[in-house]
Length: 216
Image (spheres, rainbow, N blue to C red):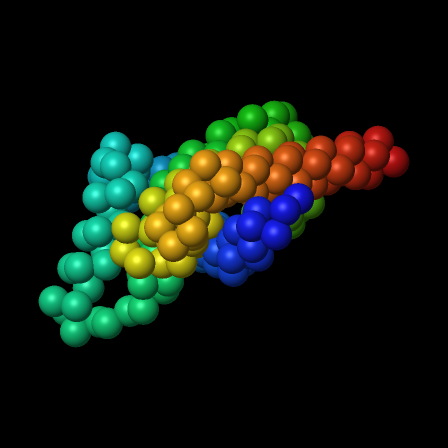
């Protein structure tokens, strides 16, 4: 690796950290809302419709537009957010819509017979959820959640439009300052591939661990 390419990778490292932080923060912030949406979709008619409206908006509109709306609309309500925080919030609201469907599908996949058996044994609703439904649902949802995390990392490349210095933004800056666009964007591409591969490995290890625990 020549000094020029080494300099490109060094410059992209800051963007790499920002991408990881924004993506994981959005995933964690979106999870509680996703759980509420999943519960609402299993509730009454009103809550189901409200959840459906939320899902339709955040799943059916471009992420780029969502980022711009969150970034430029909040100041009208007196809420000034730094670009990184605005990007994290927008991605969290977006991923909550996708995560909620994963949670809902995972819970629906748990056999109803086991839930009925738990009720007959005298377990409360909370005990049934944490002891019966949640462990099985997590194993079923894990591959989809890893896929959502990978999609979230890729979608985070759009936050550069609101001046967040992620991998893509850093690559643009490096390409403009060094006149080496091929090296800059190829390095950025490799970083996204690395993140995706690491997430896939983590998901595989967790899935194997949960499978071993289930067999014990």
